[in-house]
Image 1 (cartoon, helix red, strand yellow):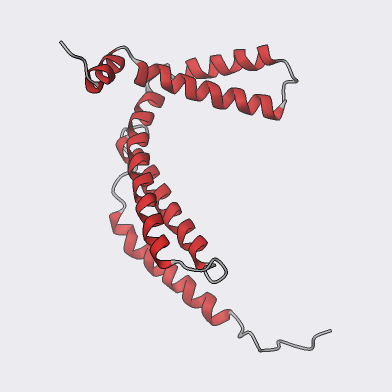
Image 2 (image 1 turned 60 degrees about the vertical axis):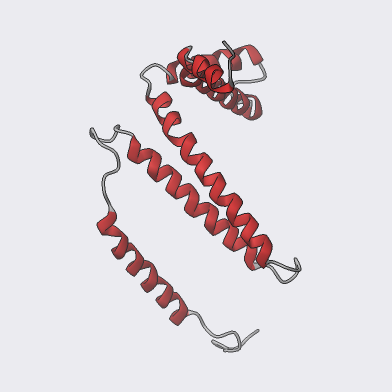
Length: 170
């Protein structure tokens, strides 16, 4: 029987590689890197490694991290795909770098929206907040949009024109 990539990935999944080993390695590497960089506990790598191992293993104890990673990384992959499409489309619209100051703001806005959507969807899949996810806040969206529009209108009204003097300049 020939093995294909699906069989290999399913075998690794059955062995707990994706649920336990990879999350442990990720948490260990991040905690160890932070302890090494910050040097809060001195320069003893053994202490840093011991703490990183303990944090990595303890974080996997109740499957909260495993469930969250199972939820967030597929959404992150979709967010990266959206950012890639946005990058391609902005490449079509942008020209000379001197005139394209708006591109970085649009890129940041798309990235921020994708980040919020990824985190929101991941939290929606979880059940750690009083037995349910974040809940349905769809009725709040029009209120939030109205508040943002009013805030923008107030900022536009309050902002003084570029040529206006508010008093004597020294």
